[in-house]
Length: 260
Length: 260
Image (cartoon, rainbow over all chains, first blue to last red; front, side):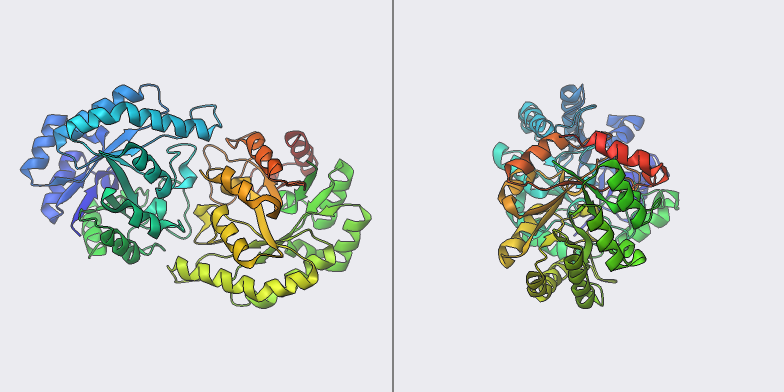
């Protein structure tokens, strides 16, 4: 599998311009930028710089957050940006509970409504939407879609122009992982890697480098390939520890640890 | 629902003898002790003191950890202790990955083997085993059974003498919670309450008091009752913050927050 770098991995050390340059220097062939980083250097400049360096845009992070107030406009802008960047998908982190709410059922219904509202625009723009189920420990704050099964139920409902992003950090524990990856098949639009550390000291920013934790990456990658995925593996590590390291060294280690 | 106190809730402030006394003083009618606390005052003394105070033993914590070396003997001892205490169930925290392993499938198979080995003794002793699915964020370190669906598949396999402990902290996020609670029906052997704080600052010891977080306790309790559960609601709060509070105050707040 070819390698892509999710720009969150070195976001505290480098600007997007530096990350694009870093990928090119280290022979990493894909990139998945975050919208705030794109905005910081400008959409046109980001797009032309990524193209000039021959990088595939394996995803744009992120749309979603359908429980936020300006969700509609924000998602339509995200679709335009993904189109401009030639992104292979727009990753959807769907949002958790609205402030003051305990109603997960209602939050989940909002996700259906939100996707229904933006999917026609995404199809017109040729930008596939990739629902990313997030770990259950992030259900309240970031995403109320928490299993691959749940995400695929959404895909079944909406059919064309929508799929899933499989991030090992979020799904590695799932007893149904293998069967749902098979069910997903060609609807897998992104495959994100990192590792689960033991112990994990923070719910958001203590992800591990591949090989430093307990996720059976070889087995998951094998399932993903068997399901028909032919895209990139995208390293996405939110980690206070790795954000303190020399970014060139981080990229070298990402390459070394993602062989296969 | 009548109230029970899981002794972990005030374990840093009080010995088991003090907790038994506290429950009696505060009119809490059930208790669910941990084995280390029982051992600290002696099984006979714990048992006679609990009986003398008229407390129901809603569970004994805990058996399980089938990936540990001495799992068989330890579980057989736990069954004897649960029998001696007249516990309504022995709670099973099944164990995570063995040291150095990344193989969840194999760990899960060990759970089947472990339960198969101890269930005949549990049945003879009249001690129902309650599988407690733990939050996916504890899959590596404490329990590789992470959803109610998974736990009930085990129950279906083993049939008599086994059920589940439903702890809201572990299952509140589950999109299948309601349907699996219905499926469980009379096999619900324990119902544990607390709350999920936003933000949560620690994966183990940052649970909230009921009402301080985002779990829809009223809705879950309603499902549990509809499923036919007639037992106690058991407060179980692992929390550095609550372990610093005056334990009499903690018990009063538990009572006030668990009405219904």
